[in-house]
Amino acid sequence: MKKLIPSYVRVPALFFAIFGLVEYFVDSGDKPAFLEYPIIMLFLVLVLFILIAVEGIVGSIENVLFQSLDEAGKARYLANTSKVPEFKKAKALYHKLKGGETPIEEEHEIILDHNYDGIKELDNNLPPWWLYSWYASMVFAVIYLFNFHVTGSSDTQYEELDNEYAQAKIEIEAYKKTAKNLVDVNSVVLLTDAADLQIGKKVFDANCVACHMADGGGGIGPNLTDKYWILGGDIKSVFHTISEGGRSGKGMISWKKEGLKPLEMAQVASYVLSLQGTTPAKGKDAEGDLWQPEGTEDTTTPAEQENTEALEIGKTVSSNN
Image (tube, rainbow, N blue to C red; front, side, top):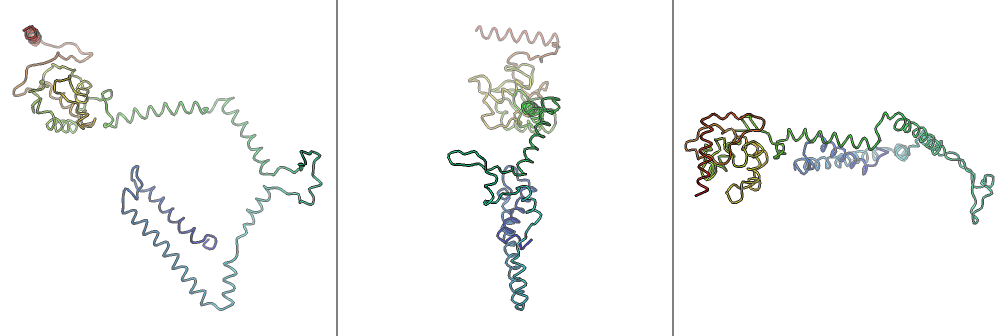
């Protein structure tokens, strides 16, 4: 094998084979492994150096051994190294597929009467490889026709495309359900895991206490512990308010523009809803409308109903004044 493949082919072939194995087995994301991990680049340089060194050492040893031979041994060595493999079976197969050729001196025997502006035509036989390809294409055409257009046992390319699109949509939806960072106002759900709520509390303490107080009782912003909401009290509404901001000119900014990630907004929205029913130290008066989740009956007690009516009357009087 060494005699058949020169060193200038062996060294690059081995190097790129090792390079390909490294790229295959090292998880480097979208970047090449040697860029993501510089130590790999050093390793590849070392591998290339070793391959070149091995070739040089082997060549030197062969040269030393050659010089130690007598004249007859040198002649035998040079005769063996100069031999070129004949590949007899491959050549025989090639000539069989190529077909016989009519010698030039015998072409007058197969010339046809056709004459096109002095150009004459020879009646040569088609090469076997062309005939075999033609026969194979006919067999393939029959099988294809029977499979796709007679029995319909296989999908056509258009049906395959539609099926792949449908499967891709299913996979995308399944991925969105598990990839929390892709959450949006349409896919957000209430998070109840303690770890998510703990992160939501940290986000709330870092960004929201200035307006809503640490216990959610409200200050500049509304009270988050009661049942009254200005822009809706379900998870989608709270997420949307955090993401896009509140009413124009009322102070609630868009935290999406401030750099909060979708998952963080879902976590803080879930934490805000977990404050429902708690008792803040100095709870602000209720603002907005009593929020009743869809599909649930009104379970407001008579006392709560009276408080609600009194609050609405107070708002009406205030607006009239």
